Amino acid sequence: MAEQTKQLSEIPFSILDLASVAAGKTAGEAFKNTLNLAKSAEKLGYKRYWLAEHHNLAGVASSATAVLVGYVAANTTTIRVGSGGIMLPNHAPLIIAEQFGTLESLYPGRIDLGLGRAPGTDGATMRALRRDIARTGHDFPELLAELLGYFAPAKEGQTVRAQPGAGLEIPIWLLGSSDFSARLSAELGMPFAFASHFAPEELFNAIAIYRQYFKPSRSLTKPYLMIGVPVIAADTEREAQRLATTSYQRFLGLVRGQSVMLKPPVDSMDGLWSPYEKAAVASRLEIAAFGSAETVRKKLEKLMAMTNADELMIVTDTYSFEDRLRSYEIVSEFNAAFNSSIKTDQSNFVIAT
Image 1 (cartoon, rainbow, N blue to C red):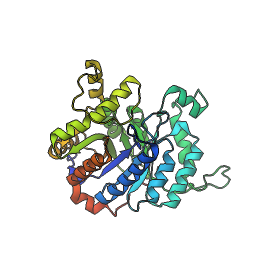
Image 2: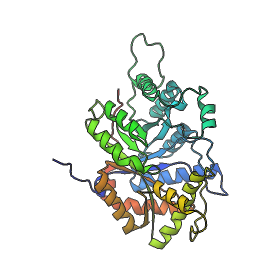
Image 3: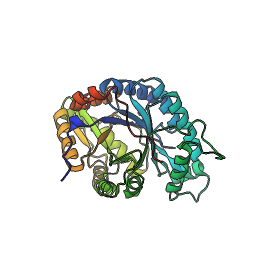
Image 4: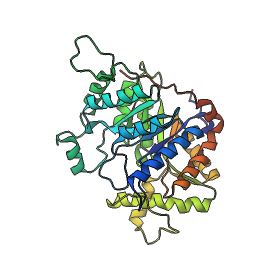
């Protein structure tokens, strides 16, 4: 029997933040916005607040991801806080185990560890981070196994231990934009988050693989899928479409290999991009929900009908913080009844070993 499609009111919403820097602003201001948004998200009933690791990318200030996770967790009380994600090949697994073991010890029951295998940067910066130019991410399964070993209860005679970290049950997610992490998540019985907020082309293939090959584990008895969704909701359709030009300009910067700082919205993108660039940006934002409350609701309902996701992670890029907050306020109303029941429910997955 086919699984019944979930409704928006039945699933949690979460937030992904890159600590985006607006043109003319500073990283310090971006961090203040991050904290203000996290506090508001907690009040609005969002379940998680994740920060993503990127490096040497003008306009993105979340490079010291674990530090920002601690900053947000220290100034909130109930919302889960985590990484979306830590790029594991950039780091020694022991360091990640110690960092997130420390975070879990400080803020027990509220920390998530999402892991990716991409560098989150350009080739030159990747080499500066990893030092070993032979490390390309192909050893991700081995690095993951090592990391999971550090989180497992310490064994007698174990030479290297994560202190703190060993024996702590921190929910670990695999993140991806292709079928690689979908397969690995399924094999290990782990929750899976797909980066469809910027790479939607492989979404449905990855979902099918994850669900088809999922093997129950101690931490998870059935597949749990979260998908990233670009959303800009405003009080009117016209205003939302104008605000969306900030996202269009950011993705245009990615296409051109230029700065991705948040730029002020414009009345029209005509003359700012070529037909090829417009199509390239549109492909990156294929599942985006931009519009009035009713438009966004309908788009998210359609996406749920197509994916039956267990959770939506909302990504909102607007130049003004006030517009960004307003968008999240509007979206929170789509499942307000459910949110009221999960504000104090922080249960989730235990560590996969």
